[in-house]
Amino acid sequence: MAVVQIAGRYLLVSREVALQTQAIDEHALVLLCDPNAPAEDDVPDDLVW
Image (cartoon, rainbow, N blue to C red; front, side):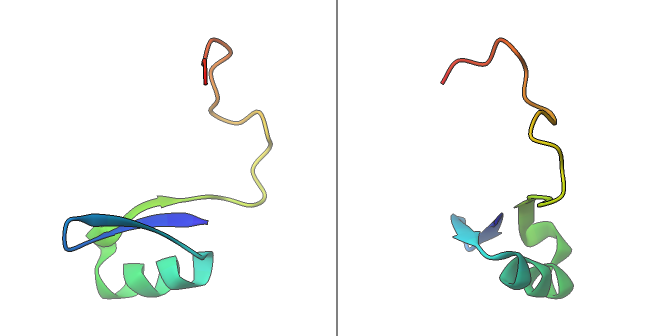
């Protein structure tokens, strides 16, 4: 999963599409999730959903 920004809009896309987008415009890639990252990575304990 990834988030890219194109023409002022944010789109949820697959990893493959995100990497293709990054090759065209590196600033368009907003977030690229690492599927191998541990589940507890970068989530604060006090986060309330």
